[in-house]
Length: 177
Image 1 (cartoon, one colour):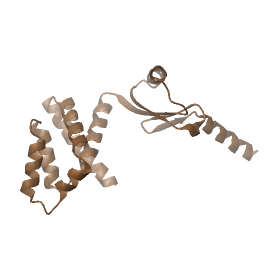
Image 2 (cartoon, one colour):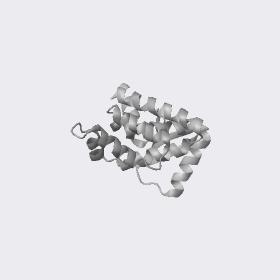
Image 3 (tube, helix red, strand yellow):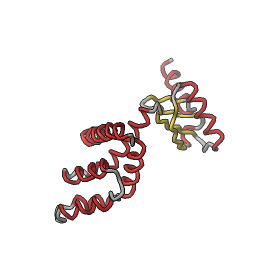
Image 4 (tube, helix red, strand yellow):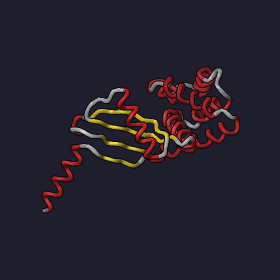
């Protein structure tokens, strides 16, 4: 798994360099996202099927990349020729992450015990942006086992201010005394 992740990242980094040169970073992102969403697991299996002649598989790639940039078309053709077309969704995610990081945007996953309405979500994000000094791309989830409070995952940093975490800490402290 680590190898595919690093391979996807290398492809994404190379495409980002091309995007900077071509001044098309966002266009490449949109194309990658569209193509990754459009290629279902069944379509990827078909594109990897060795019983289908390579010329037909390459023609299919040409057809789905019609109207796309030369860089995107070349990437997909290269992935197909090297039997790495299954990396496309991971490449799209890695590319998006690289673009966000270069723009100073940090991915944040916020988990609460109860659903937060849009106003509450905005308030939490604004407060976190102010305290972290970064713009955030936030996703919200609900985990009732938290009882109350929030778990905040900013990049690879986790802040757990949930009631469950506080009760666990109290339990450990009491067990130690």
